[in-house]
Length: 428
Ligand code: IMP
Image (cartoon, rainbow, N blue to C red; front, side, top):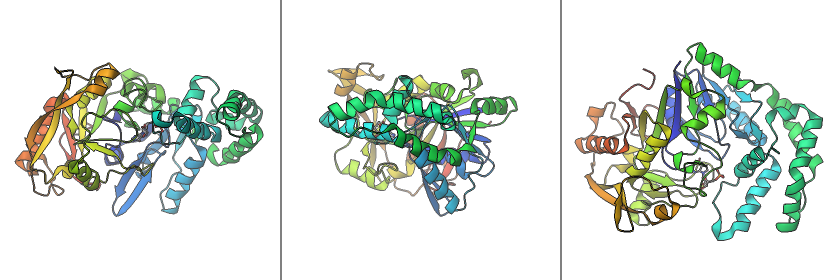
């Protein structure tokens, strides 16, 4: 019953796509359990590069069934365009399964996301503008539209009208926008219904049966631990639970079934959007990390904010996710620095603090306490085993492991599928 959760240990964009895809060959099901097309995975297969936003990256592995779980929010237009984009490149997508309980991102959710951000002005979250937050808000307010509603026109109509009741008041009276007509939304949604129908399934039943049959199931988180609505840097977070518990609620699988929780950890730190970031760099080192690391958002095209590795955050990720392993990515990006600073603790109001403060005020005031680790200049992209790495790169990895509280079981040394050092198998 190997059920693995793979999630971001920082603020997202840690290179999960590569990790999922690496495991894809031996995995029977890859399940997304939260988020929507705010995520962005770049997966390199041979000389082909794929950018995925909504679909689980396992879609690129033949033999693997990709699943969109009930905890995901689905923009049907994006879903169909990602599918047809892959089909045009010869990728078979026919195995995809979508939970009938997943919520749909409607055109009005996208409008509300954009107008709210504009309204917030300087206080904006810097969302991806894809309607994620408003769709989850509708779900919690019990006015959401689910995938299964596409197959009952009268219910769909009633639900869209109910959802628009309050929104149209807001749009017209507060935001000075035109009201959205329920009939038009229903017509657009019905236009997707037949194209999606073949994928809709009782995914919790299928996944639990698969686990009972000893199949390998991989739960793939979008975003990252510090963007979690409960455990992240609220309010500068996404509106779902990328942390490990989200895999259970977002896929309908009990916690007793999860065997391994793997945190993807970049060898330095990045963040997109607003919010605190203690190790952020505003100098040439930050610019170098951005350039060498290709730190530009897959989804939004925005430059990512870059900084040194933060062990306080890594320790926190180990704690709130119950991590059993780390997959350290992008170690090659650090090649060439004489010395590499690593944040080992924070200084808050003159005091040294080892753990992430629960108080947002303290976190906003946290100053990184750095330890300098010796760098390396040798090319590491061809390294196949840990011992192939230069001594200082080995010491860097070992230091991170010790500070972060879980074993580093794999290391990414380049963007390609085979540019990974496996130390402990995730499937043993
Ligand atoms: P939302 O998820 O579009 O509501 O955006 C909320 C916050 O999460 C913003 O700061 C986004 O930049 C950030 N965010 C959302 N998805 C990702 C991701 O996949 N990687 C990194 N940041 C993300």
